[in-house]
Amino acid sequence: MALPLIDRYKYVGLVLLAGLLLLLWPSGKKDVKAQEEPPPVQTGAAEEDFSVAALEEKLSETLSKIHGAGDVSVMLTVQGGSRRVLAQDSKESREADGAYERQSETVVVSAGTGSGEGPVLLQQLYPRFQGAVVVCEGGGDASVRLKLMEAVSALTGLGTDKIAICKGKG
Image (cartoon, rainbow, N blue to C red; front, side, top):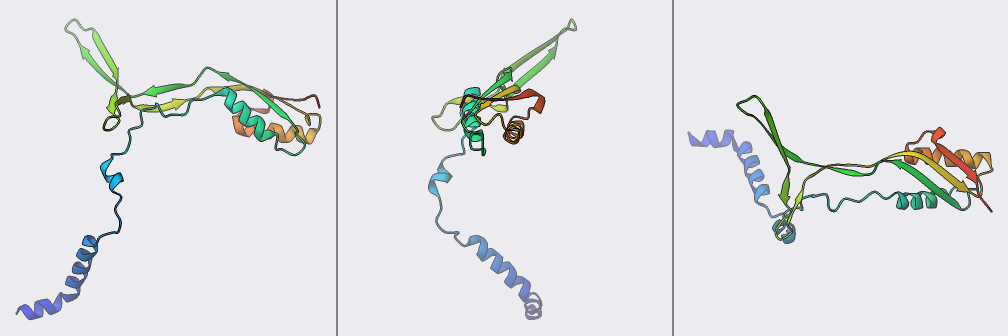
């Protein structure tokens, strides 16, 4: 009686046995360091700060590579400054006289063993660009001006009415 049952389900048993062996099979060299340390908590301290001067320098360097532009200098104006939005834990309570009381505090988490604590960063908001001035040696040529205008517009999101391109000394 057991023999026909084994004969009937022998392939199912073989597949289950093969699956069990694959699950137990060692996957090779294990990364011990990765298992010991939990992943770091992003606290916002490592976030890159926004710098208009650094962006102007990088933009100048990039635009100077455009054929015919020559030496390029860029000035950007921005509205406001960068700010960080941190996670908040808030509690609301209603008192007996009908007044509402709201308390909120920044959520702080541990960043791992010995790393201390830090706030939870939800969002990093950067300032918006208001305008750009580009001064370059090739600013007198219409095709170079068009290429520069398109590049600055693409990189900053500014409309062409907010970008001025001038011919520099050269």
